[in-house]
Length: 498
Image (cartoon, rainbow, N blue to C red; front, side):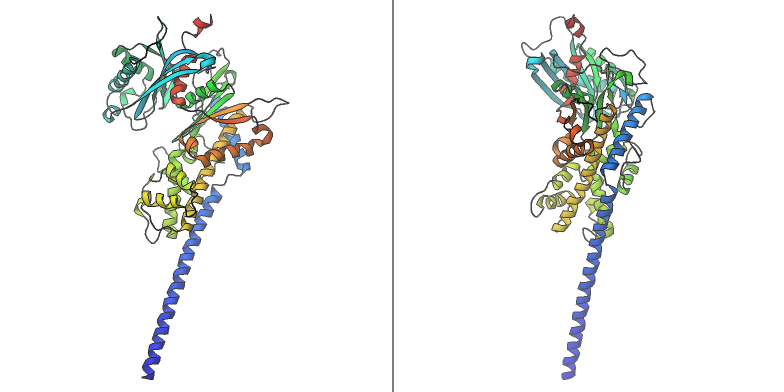
């Protein structure tokens, strides 16, 4: 019996040793995987680095590209489009003005009653209309007839005492957020449709002409005085409320910037110099690129797989459309190479753009002790449950790296504009205020992103200069901004002034 007992004891001891070895091996394996996760995060953080020296190089490169784009067409990655807007609103505008904002699957019609310096915007009304999908790929006439009919119905609801002066034509600003080759303040030909629209016969046509013909067909007499994009609208809205506004930046799904240039500083402008001496430039800054931009393997892969490879590089690292997707790509690498979510890669994690920037923002702003929001988002969006606190902390850190890079590069771009205008230094005893109007969902709703932009501007400009640089939220540039531009470029201004 003794031999059996000893044998059993030996077998048991061996089993215990084997089990212990398995546990140790598992721990070593899992600690090896965890080390790989942290190595991926660390490498990504280093590649996304935006020290002040690098940001200054980015700002300088932005200024150089701005000069090149103003010198000649095609001279730069920045288009630097002449908008023909040479009079921004002052606050003195009076009367009733309309705006049409077409930028996607919905459009808005607005009516704004302006009362001059004292009362400013007396009243504004608007209506949002969705475009039936079949009209987005149908004929040009069908689309513009639909818009003109909705506009006519809206005009018919003008209330008592809210009409244009007798003998005067109604005037309207038209915000058209698609690529357009601007030929005058109130005309521009469509370069291409985006955002799900595909009507070949409109391409190359003057979009104001198309709208005007449609309004004539429904018996509506409105003159389109200004064709603008949402960034120029934001600049107009900002200037209306604050005369020190010099530039506008949109940080939303996409990104763009516009600013007020001195007309004589635009070599490619061959027309008469405007009376105001100013000209608003639509930079199309999403297309900026420079060897100084901190790009990673994830950005390069995202760009290569995008609909426009090699284009909009700046936009792809700073705007709301892409930030969440960059986070997803890094998480995918962690899942693939470090089994971050276990032995299998979660199927949902393979879907491009499933993780949107609002989800990322919610996780980044999670202040609960167990990072409950992060856990909930992973479960709801990616169907990943049972995440540990240390995994959640890695995800918050990852969101922080992506958002910080985007915000700091946005700030460098703004400094590039201020530099071009000579407003990045303090002149002898001169205290000129420079205000930058900002709008867009990313800027408005992603608090840490917004705060990081403001802090980085302070770092880049230094204490003395940044006292005179202000960022302001300018709301609804694409709507009210367009109405204000139709007022500041009204055909009746000369009459009133004389």
